[in-house]
Length: 115
Image (cartoon, rainbow, N blue to C red):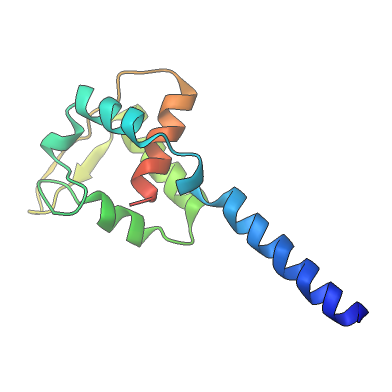
């Protein structure tokens, strides 16, 4: 019996850890989309199709399982405006998001990665 309880406890703990760490659980999608729209992100990105920049689904897939790297890369792009390579091979400065609110930035990044 103790073996069974340990396995159940382990399963419950693992499930809880996944749910807590999953970016999709804490995302305010409407706020993220509103911030993206206010900053013209959809001019170059779409959720599920490639435009000048990669789709958010493509970005999420690229970084699946590598959230720390993803947050670092996305944060750099949206807060410092580095040169980025576009889908057609050209380069341009990435637009800087017009907010200093860390919660808004985190929510936007989580939303992108939850696609």
